[in-house]
Image (cartoon, rainbow, N blue to C red):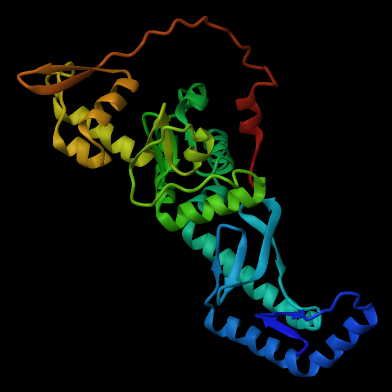
Length: 328
């Protein structure tokens, strides 16, 4: 008995005090028997394609890791290194490495197609390119208030181009709505964590939930990447939030100061009436009772801001910098 073969790597049964010469002898002895089996497994991996990327940034085959991801030039282009025994020839390692990289690239192209299309946009319009860049850099979702000045200058025909690429202009957010599918969320969060090397301790919200309540504060930036907007202890999925606004806007076209709380609103979010009332109040709506029914109306808090004037030729203006950026 010289050790155990775990998928593609031989773990030698080394005793305390083993010398390098002993290790080399064991590996030499194992090469004739273990080497062919590793090559056979490599062919099985390539033939079946039954590999899986998990949230620990490792690619698995039959419950064991066969490759590790590390940060690359950007979050959609990670580096890959094999978990493989060094007895395998470099040419065989290269074939497997190329296969796994092609598999990963195809997975990214399929699951995150709208994000890839946005990155590879060929339009020369600087306004469109600038917003596309912001969306790409922020994993497909940005808060509307962060780019409000820029959006005011975006014409309808420019918005139409972005909508055709899957961009949705919501009340609170600008986002790629196709990225909220479970497989897309899992993949882009894994790639984002791998690239930025943070948020390791935070868990993804359970798929299928549109409304969450956390007594302990969660990282709002991470939850935004996951597709949830924060209202104190409440989190609402961004695309569901937009559907709620549509339902609110269409509920009473004649009197916007008397919007009736209906079961469809609760069902859409999947929350209780009490939680809905607390949430809607945090969204600057005032609630009241009438004839044993609950109503609400929009009552935004007035904010007084000083007006600052910026010179149009200010080179340090972030939006001027963004407009000069282009994709290659």
